[in-house]
Amino acid sequence: MPNINEWDEKKEIPQSIYKQVGEKGWLAGLMGTDYPKHLVKNTIKSVSPDKWDQFHELIITDELSRCGSGGFVWNILGGFGIGCPPVLKFGKKSLVERIVPGILNGDKRICLAITEPDAGSDVANLTTEAKLTEDGKHYIVNGEKKWITNGVWCDYFTTAVRTGGSGNGGVSVLLIERSHGGVSTRKMDCQGVNTSGTTYVTFEDVKVPVENLLGKENKGFSVIMTNFNHERIGIIIQAVRFARVCYEESMKYALKRETFGKKLVEHPVIRQKLALMAGRIESCYNWLENLIYQASKMDETEAMLKLGGAIAGLKAQSTLTFEFCAREASQIFGGLSYSRGGQGAKVERLYRDVRAYAIPGGSEEIMLDLMIRQSLRVHKVIGMNLPVPKI
Image (cartoon, rainbow, N blue to C red):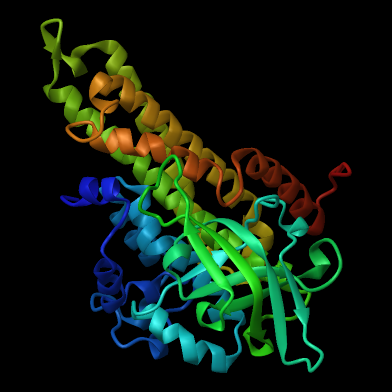
């Protein structure tokens, strides 16, 4: 926390911090799966790998988010948390054993490269192309990716490519290594999450071994969909904690700031703001714990079917709550939340980070629509007699 303001203004965080997180064994615990103890030098000391569950993952992400900087959390956990799980789950054993230990131990970095300049949430229409060579040993990749978290530092890119025809059925996922050549990255300046390393990536005739295919050719859409629940849970945890940081900072300030002869908290309008913030935060957190508990009792396929819609709904609800709390906190702090640094630093910074949570991982509008469509599908599958419209 003492370094966050300085790092945010410099738009960089020392690489040694990421290395420390790996050395503590934390990175290995953020895979949304069993703790891969066979792939790390050091495991988390306070919890046996055999007892590791998704609530421990919640704790790590939640506690790191107390710093009140989306850029910091994305720098440490962002690209890695969504780029590494597909490799671990769908990569060939030889590929996993070759690259994953270096990533989990904090020596190498990885990101997820799906979004393109003209294809964000509409994954089925991505255009980055991978053509198989005549000898069938390599894919030649050409295309561009945009808004790729951590990409500027990464050694590996878990990349969605088009290997077949149009639509979902022509998408595959490749693990592209920077060392393959033809990979160029440039850092992007964005509204918030300044230290996240948001990147524009260009692939020019990159020669990728077929062994780097994750899952099966033209079946990459299911790899991507499997990853979305884990990604969205991570966004939810951060958004809810950031909303809570806004609330906590507002409460501390309201208890000491005096206006018109009395403390801010003695004004009914301020107490109402705090009450509305608290109510939204606690309802989101309760739903979050409920979903994580359910997910921990289901296998991945069942969780995708039954919880995908609910997770999408909470993703939207949590980012709306984050935005509401950032605004109300800004009103409570007044001018102090409009300038960088000082008492209102966390609120000012988080207000800039809001859009980075409302849009990535599926925009609020798409999430709310997905919530209803998925709910109707699930009810139909389990046999409820509902008049399901064509949607």
